[in-house]
Each structure stands twice: as C-alpha cells, then as structure tokens.
Length: 324
Image (cartoon, rainbow, N blue to C red; front, top):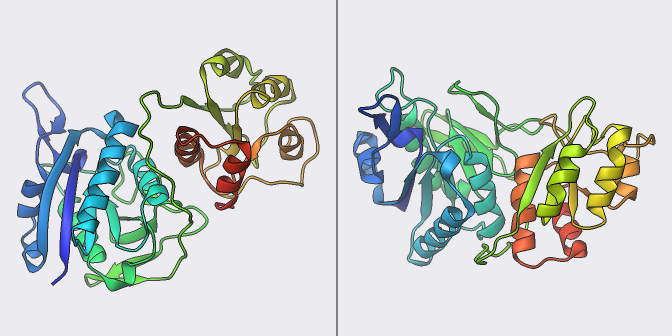
C-alpha cells in the first residue's frame, strides 16, 4: 500500500456556506478525506497548511508548500496530493514543478463546485488525484494536475472556463492521460530541468504582467515599469505589439528583463515570421526574452523565481529556452 500525504491549501474544494452569504474555506484536509470512503483503501496522512481562497495565495504560501512537500518526500511519502483553489491552481502547480524534484509524484487538485453544491466534483477529483499519486506510472513526470478524470502537466495546464467542471485543459498539447475505471492511463513526457530554488528573500522581486490590447500606446507599461524588476508582456497573436507601443517596450527592456509571450492561450511565440515594427522579430531584436510555449501567468512565475535567485539576463534566457 502506497503512503500518500494530502496537503490542504483551501479553495472551493474545502468551502462551506457562511452566515453572511456565499461559501468560504472551512474544511480541513482530514474532512476532505473523510468525505470519500474509497480513500480508505490507501494509507493517507492529512495536513492542512492553509485555508485560503486561491486568489489570496502568495509566493510565501507557495514557498511553505514546496518545503512541506519536500519534507514529506524526505520522510518516505510515495506520493503527495495538494488540494488548492482553482483560480491560481495552474500557477501554484507550475511553481512546484519548477522547484521540486520530479521523482515522487506530486499531484495538485481542486474543485469547481463546493461540497454542498449539487454535483460537487471535489470528492471524485480527490480520489482521482490520490490514485494518480499512488501510481508508479506517475513517477518522473513532474508535477501533475488532476481534475475531471484528466491528468495534465503543470507546465501546460490552464483554467479555461469560469465555472465548468471541465475547466482545465492543456491547449495544443492535451492531457498526459486519463483515468479509465479508476485506473490511470498515462503517456511519458519528460519534465523540464534543472530545478530552481524556492524564493526566500525578504524583498521579493516585483514582476508585472502587462496584457497588450488594440490601440495600446504603452503608457500603462511606461508608468508601471519604474516600480518593476521584470515584466512579462502578453503580446497580441504570435508575440506582437502596436507600433506606437514599441518605444515603451524598448525602454523597459533596456532596464529590466522583459519576457515576450502571447495572450492567445495556445502556441509558441514566433521568432522570424513577421518583420514590421512591433513584430516578434523586432521585439526580440530589441532585447526581449522569448517566452516559448509558456502562457503569461506561468512565465511570470518563472521570471519571479529566477530574479529572486539573482539570475542575470543570460540565465533568464537559458531558463526560458528550456520551455520552447
């Protein structure tokens, strides 16, 4: 019998109605496990690290989570499951993927419907996550995200719907596998390495995410840039900005790392196709870092980790190159 540790962080999966209206985090990890009788077939230890709605999860919370996962693995856990709110689940899972050794399965799960809602999906998601964490096939794949009987890689998965129980998808790549009659069927995907240290600085870097839109003149970026240590630019299409915005982008890139990504939600930033002012060729020639296949939110997490570790420009470029 595999020894699985469930670490609770809060989120919809752990929410109950409040007296003032709406649902709020209320259930600990032990209560989540007790609600799923089928989990009795596993040797499970439950710990509650946080009881937060996921919009309130910060880098300090994730540093504590990463340390807790490491401690459980060092203590002999065969797999770790993290229950987490879905709003920022993709970013938290990616941070764990970028900082933890990929050997022992680490699975992040959550719920789109709270436990008292009709058709609550939390129990099924938790059972599936524990099943995957206990599976030898999940070893060496990096951090996984399991919801709706699908198994996704942390570096690809995104929340694509506000309320559907099928909200999580991996655009352009698809899931690593699915559960069939409760059994994981997984394909092999090599994780990205090397691992980065978890930030422990008292003054964390301030990394901004700027989404480009029609008619953007760059004034938002120009005003925000002096307060930032790094910027992720969610560009139009394949990594483009309006021509009028180019001076603001170039000025910022001359001072701090600026990572070029796409706001589209799928595909890689291009390199050599377009040549007009504000195209990917133009921006990369002005010193922007190619964000590859990483979506803007994950690119911001990676840049944060790198800057917190004192990475110079060459190291930033090398790290992002691993995700192309």
